Length: 330
Image (cartoon, rainbow, N blue to C red):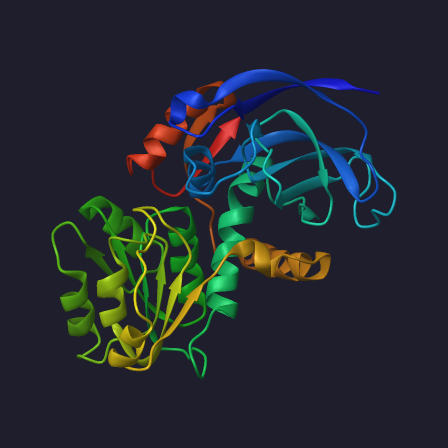
C-alpha cells in the first residue's frame, strides 16, 4: 500500500528559497524499517548545513533529521517498536520534513506518555547532543562538581538544554550568547555566568571568572569565529570540543599550536557516531528522557512554523533570531 505525503525537498544546494513543498509517494517499510506519521518536526542547524552545501549530499534531498509521531507500520526484524507506538527520533538519513516517511528503525525510540509530541520532536537531536557532550566528551580526568566549562551559543536549543543539565551535574557553566536578553535566558536556565560576546571579550571574562585558570573544556558549535579565542580559554591539557560550524568551518591549522597553548586536546564530535547502534541510541535516550521527566531539564520551544513556512524558519535560524528550540507543525 502506498500513501501520499507532503514533503520539503531541494534539488540543489543553496539558500532557503531552494526548499519546495512537493508530494511524494510513501510505501511499506522493508527489513529494519518503520513507517511513521509525524506529529511535529524539529529544526536544527545541521539542516541549514545540508541545505547550503556545507555538508554535501546527493540530490534531490528531502531535509530534516528529527521528528515525533505515531508508528504506522513495522518491517521485519524490528522488535523495539510496534504499530501505534508514540515515537521520536534523531536519525540519518535526512527526511523528517514531511507528513509520513519510511525510515530505519534503529534510532527511533518510544516516546514516554508524559512527553508530548512537540517536546519529543524538539528534544531528540539537541538533547542527545547535550547528553554526549556533557557525559561522554570529557577532558582528561573527567569533570567534577564545581568545574567550570565554557559553552557557546548557550541560548540556543542545545545550549539551553546543556545549561540545565550542567546545573544538575553540579558544573559551573559559562555561557556565551549574542544579546543581553539571550544571556538572561541562559542564566535563567542554569548557566552560572553568561557573557554577551557582542559587548564583551569572552576570553577576558572567562579568565576573570576562573581566576586566570581557564576552563577544562570548551563546547563550541560556532566554529570559525570563536575557535582561536576558545583555545586560549583552556587550562593546560584542556579539551576543545568542536561540534558545529554556525559561523563557518574552522580553517586548517598546524597541530603544533595545540602544544604551544598547553598540550591541549581537540575533538570534532558528531552525534551520529554516538548513536551508531540501537543500544547506544536507547541508552542515551533513556538518560535524556529521565532528566526531562524528573524536571531537571525543561525543553523550551520558542518558535513554531507550519511546515509550508520552512523557508522563513531557516532564515530566522540563520539570522540568530531564534532562541531555544523550533518546531515545524503539521
